[in-house]
Image (cartoon, rainbow, N blue to C red):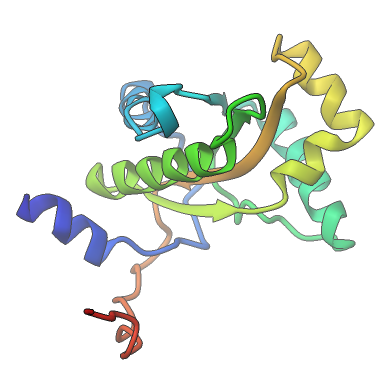
Length: 172
């Protein structure tokens, strides 16, 4: 139990990555953690697309940045991303996908990797370009983008956690 609590306390979003690729065995371990996320009624509505191809990463990065109207890399140079989708036919699809993303990020930390949750997946895959990618990947139309876990080896030191804001726990 202590290891899980320590991982929750220590995990931080990483916004700079080494170019070094992540071993496939480690990526499989991270993906497995996503599969074991809690889900409403045990429906397991979350699905995952692992991307390590540099050209596709660049395309996805540009799509995500375009949602913001910016020309930046929202993946911060990460060598891999996991796009998390969830089946909108499930009543808890947003929550299912969010829990899966949480598991992915905790697993990356436990393996010595870094990660960051990148928003705007829903907008990306509602676009014509995004729908075409989903179709090319063989994904069901009912799958909606939840978020993207960018991951890799951190570049430099990962900062310590900020002090937790007081007054957020209410015991009644």
